Image (tube, rainbow over all chains, first blue to last red; front, side, top):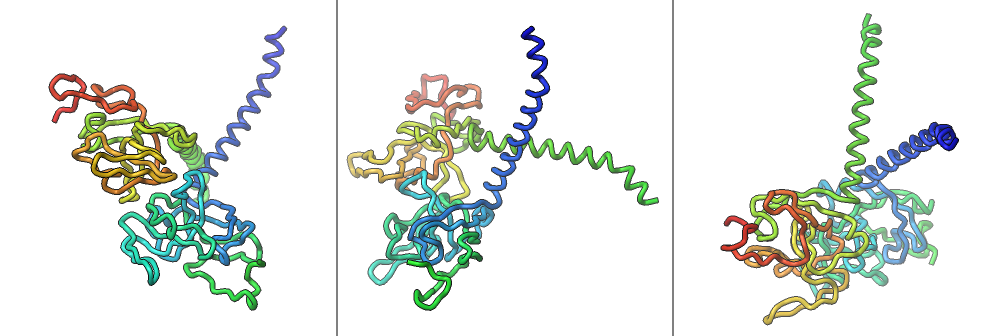
Length: 174
Length: 174
């Protein structure tokens, strides 16, 4: 009796298994795309104002530039934090290996294999000015497009936007 | 005439496409396994003697310990080089964040989010004694088993093997 019940369920189990396998294959390719081509990220926090929003910006991150070594000064990047390995942060590359970074008080040369990152919002950003140059191997991707909020929709360039708080329509509401 | 030739080839093209898709799906699954579970690595160089061979050891690397934060002092790890971001090296963790590392001449405390790595072969190894502590985010995996050469087949433990060059059968031929 129980064997017949079992046989009755076999097509359903097969069907469920095939659909699960199809979902698994989809997630496999999604993962490969996210790892090697392009992925999304939600950026929150004040350190990249005015380029990115305080309460959250949905950005597109491409992963090709890192592998082809085309990262240069001025790129906004997704990078694993050297202080908290589980956290990924977004900052801008201010200097690559060999560059001299700093101001009038202190200058440093970025060592081989490292980069110097700083947030666009110099007053509220924890970056290389606090924890020093970070190894290039911590880079995760290059932020090239902002999807959300709609007023920031557009590409992310190599220059920090100089937005006057009174006059520009694209500035952040403080 | 050409249209008939075209129709003649359709099943072959479909077959080729299906087989290619099967191979692609296999590599997708292999990639996910390599990234999240376990992968192989070929280790070459003198810096991890006597644990690993000079001319090449095939090792198994597991990727779970890093994600679950279970890396401790004494583990042999695969880590991206802080000096050459395209190179992955194998070293042993000698200190984690908060540990004091060093000898009688100089002692340092490993900062938050970093680890101190050294090669087992202290005389011929470029490691944290030269380039300082490295961020935990550069870790790629934990070496837990040696597959080749056969005389080294076995697990990789948390202690450096103390092999006397004259007496042990498991030592490296210099």
